[in-house]
Each structure stands twice: as C-alpha cells, then as structure tokens.
Amino acid sequence: MSAQPDVESSSASDAHEGGFRPTFDVSTERGGPNYGKFVGQVREFMDRVRAALPSAELTDELLADLKSMNAKLVDFETDEWTSPSGTRIDLPARGNITLPPYDIVDAGPDGVDATITFTRFNLGGNGAAHGGFVALLFDDLGGMAAALNIEGICRTAYLKIDYRSLTPLNSELAVRCWVDRVEGRKVYVRGTLHEGDRLCAEMDALFIKLKPGQP
Ligand SMILES: CCCCCCCC(=O)SCCNC(=O)CCNC(=O)[C@H](O)C(C)(C)COP(=O)(O)OP(=O)(O)OC[C@H]1O[C@@H](n2cnc3c(N)ncnc32)[C@H](O)[C@@H]1OP(=O)(O)O
Image 1 (tube, rainbow, N blue to C red):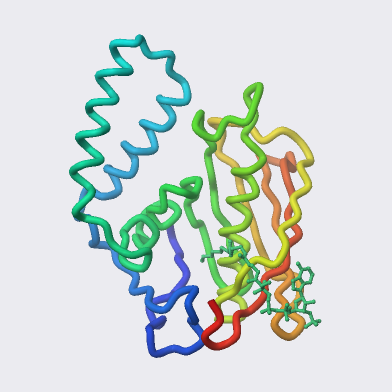
Image 2 (cartoon, rainbow, N blue to C red):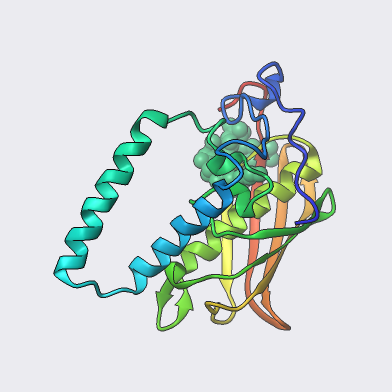
C-alpha cells in the first residue's frame, strides 16, 4: 500500500463527523503486531469453510474449537471506532473482515486505485465472484473516493452496478473509483473493475455529504 486516506484529523469535536464517525483515530498498533496475520487466518478459515466438506467428526471438533475461540473474544468487545477490524489502515481494507481485502495502490482527491483478489469465500456461482461482493467493494472504495474529494463524510444514496463480464476468483483485479461531479452535497462517483484489459463491472453511484451531526 502506498497511500491511504488521511482521516487522522477526524475527531469528536468535528461536528461534520456526525454519528457516522464521531471519532476515528487511525492506528497501526491496535491488536498488536500480529493482528494482520490474525485477520489473514480468519479470512483463510472462511475460504476453507466455503470450500470444505468436513466429516461429521471434524465438524464437531471445529465447532468446539470455535466455541472456545469465541469465548476468548467476549471480554474484548469494543466499539466500531476503536476496533482494529476497520481502523488498521496498514492492513488490506483497513483490517475490516467484512470487506474484501483490497490493497490501496493510490488514493487522493483524483480517485482511488486498488487491487483485489477474490477468493473462494467470495464465490457466487460456477467459479465467478458473487455480485454482492463486487458491490461491497465499490461501495467502500466509492465512498472513500467521495470522502477524499470533498474532504467530508458521505453516505451512499444509490449504488448501481453493471456486471459486464464474469468476475473471476484467484486473479488480481484492478479497481478504480473517481468523482465524476459534485453538485452541492451530491457527489457522483464512477468506478471500474478490470481483469487485465477486460472490464468486469462498472459502478455509477451517488454519495451525499452528511450535514453537521447527521448520522
Ligand atoms: C472510507 C469509508 C467509506 C465507507 C463507505 C460506506 C458507505 C455506506 O455504505 S453508507 C450505508 C448505506 N447508505 C445509507 O444507509 C444511507 C441511508 N439514507 C440516508 O441516510 C439519507 O437518505 C441520505 C443521507 C442518503 C440523504 O438524506 P438527506 O441528507 O436528508 O438528503 P436529501 O435532502 O434527502 O437529499 C439530498 C439530495 O440528494 C438527492 N438524493 C437523495 N437520495 C437520492 C437517491 N437515492 N437518488 C437520487 N437522488 C437522491 C435528493 O433528491 C436531494 O437532491 P437536491 O439537493 O437536488 O434536492
């Protein structure tokens, strides 16, 4: 990653943050130095679960292991603004396990360039990525492009995806999102997803700049 959005200045005292992001102190330390490896293992587990046909015995064994692991995390719950899963800007997709693990190549007011490799967890059907994951990718990176362009916090009003050709798994794809135009609080954002020269999907979205205090 060579660039990440600068959200360091966000604070609870900035009325424009509203309820959407009252405080968002970025961090590369929460969860410790191995947090990225931890998220990687979580992602690998989701891939393996999606791909596996476990024996009944293995299902029972893993069920017990998972219960044990979940119990360990119970006492460490925190809010969304301080969870490393979402605020670790040194990790793919800010360490947010909800998101496909994109890597930012470049990000600024002119747009956001990223790479993404969808894996088995992202399978839709017959070897292709699920369209919902493509939309999720565009929503997050489109929102980032809008926020960096207007230097404000936005929410998605609409998100239209045109699926132009199959989006493959296990192949590095290039995604780009940029602001097409701004009309008052309305930020129109476009996006593309390519495998090499082949266009997989396009995005046309509207993000609305939040008013002071708007959730
Ligand atoms: C870096 C991390 C990035 C993360 C990005 C993640 C983004 C998200 O996923 S956010 C979650 C999904 N989105 C939501 O939950 C939003 C739910 N909706 C809302 O909160 C509100 O409807 C909201 C904020 C979008 C707009 O409400 P509000 O602020 O009252 O604005 P409102 O006055 O209705 O509309 C403003 C303008 O936008 C237009 N507009 C609003 N929605 C739409 C729409 N769906 N289609 C077209 N135009 C619209 C209005 O017509 C109006 O236009 P004009 O100024 O010309 O009259």
